Image 1 (cartoon, rainbow, N blue to C red):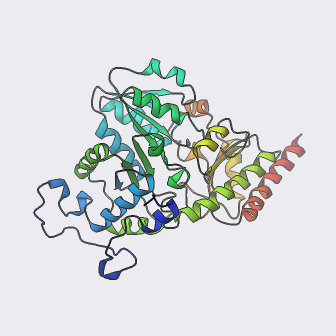
Image 2: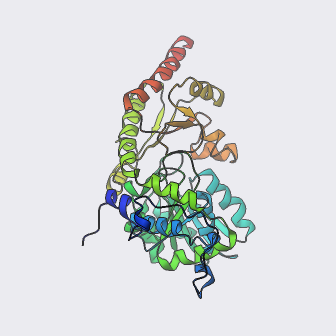
Image 3: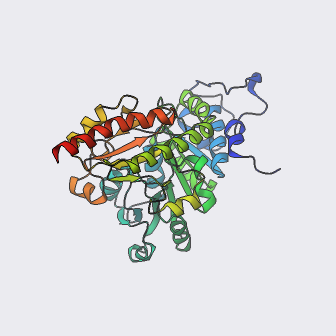
Length: 392
């Protein structure tokens, strides 16, 4: 039987068969431990910290199916997924290659925590594959990237990254939170491990924190063992909520793809805006690559008005529909200033060097009507334009 479309997989993959007591919705097994089934392997015992409850099993099966992977693992947060995957497959004396523009939390872990563990890190331009070989060492073990970078929405040479890693026996890891499995499935391109902050699009309702790792049995199994010891697991109730949220992912993503493109086009044409970062725009430097790789361009964009941090905060405070809050991927539209949130821990000069200015605004576009979102933005942008005209 042919593989079912992802819209169908979101609803049916991983659901218990037969249904438990006929329950159409997966029940919550709020039990810390389960009767001993004489399991020989400690890591498979029925115990909540080992992620072996029925809620974990169902969610793992669904996530693996969505990404077309052999195995999946849920964690207590996106950062728990990222850090546990990295410390599992890196040891003291190893070396990591990483894309040079990443989520601030990931970046902090790579530049602060990994070196303290004896792991060396080099950053590379994901759009300059000719430069990668010079950074590779005999001790290189992992190549780390993002499908769309946070917050500049760059789309690196993902095909080249996975090919480069495979040719050299490196593990290729990719954070695909911004894309979601609806828009991009990296394992199908050849990546070894795909990571998600399931807090975002997978759940979609801004009411839980979770992470996910998907890949081959060979690579996911040791990550699970490491997580069993570190303890950053997801509780059954949150598993239930995430499984429920996933079922509407395709519908939400379709609207968010369309809304973000509509907003990006208006921003690109507005005289107050200096730069718009959205891979769905023909003007985006990696638009052709994004169109080839992705089924949709996502709900994330960022733009810059060339204002100071204080001026930008004042602009954001004038928005009525859009909420000034960190995180992303929910049904409501959120805006944030990365220099004051996701990347606030970076040295200001390094941040500016990457293009993350004090006036950069990141927008997580929700599922409201696009016309209302556009009107909300245009009303404050027009005020900026009038103020600039008066000062001139």
